[in-house]
Amino acid sequence: MSEPTLSVVVPVFDEEAVIDAAFERLRAVLVAMGEPFEILFVDDGSRDSTPAHLERLRAADARVGVVTLSRNFGHQMAISAGMEMARGRAIVVIDADLQDPPEVIPRLVERWRAGADVVYARRIERRGESAFKRGSAAAFYRLLGRLAEVPIPAEAGDFRLVDRRVRDVLVRMPERRRFVRGMVAWTGFRQEAVDYVRDARAAGRSKYSLARMLRLAADALLSFSDRPARWVAGAGAVLFALSCAALVVLAVTAAAPWWWVLAAVAALDGVVLLSLGVVGAYAARIYDEVRGRPPYVVAQSHPPAQAAEGEP
Image (tube, rainbow, N blue to C red; front, side, top):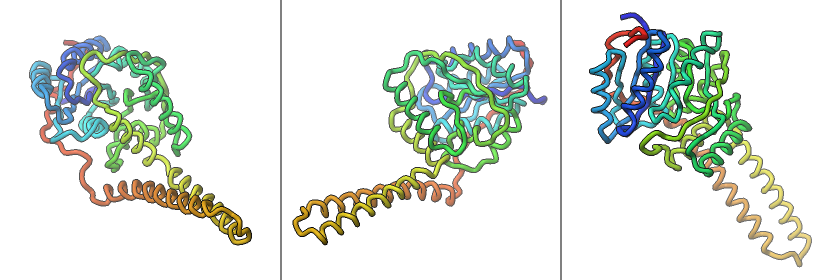
């Protein structure tokens, strides 16, 4: 079985309302490009009829492969599972909700053929998203840009193309709490942007709740920066110095109000608790790595039956 030029990894979770339409649009784009390709769907523990839809697509088209995870491990794990299975010279990651238009893929491939190892799709407009979602995303990217040890592009999600050698590096990286776009940035290589307009979701609802977004933000910050720990240490040093100064004032000025002492003690207690929380977050990540559990478990894997040329 020959290797395809392009592998497209599509993580899915409860996408019965949109999966067929997403496949038809994606297939039409890939066929028009005229390159050998494969489409790899990664079912991240769907609870609706998504698995049945994927089985029908796989049975009807030899270019489709399906990886089924044993439970819901999360979007980043699903991407990683698809990357590991992909055989193409270039790998594109795109979600099934059609917010990221498949029609952008030829532009990604064009930049790759021009020499880029990574081509990330950068959003210049977000349609159908609330003001809170847009504002929180902008704040997150600004914070990440200030804290991260490596430059991570703003307004770029997981919709991107990576060269095979970048994929090989990613597969060897052992992290169990993964922030894939940050990991791609960390690898280096030549990375370029393609601007696009992100559409509103075609159907269904977003699977990224506020809690999931906060966990992803925490993984991003803790994986690519130790500054939170250093900032807490700095705050502790400042409050300790202020507390010492307050005690000196109390010692030499009998009329000094005792609430200074209470305020100093409360401030120090707050810093201690905050410090424990930050250190605990880093320790939890270390614990995850030491246990050595796999980041995801594959229940079933059905690779494409063939590397298909770009015609139906």
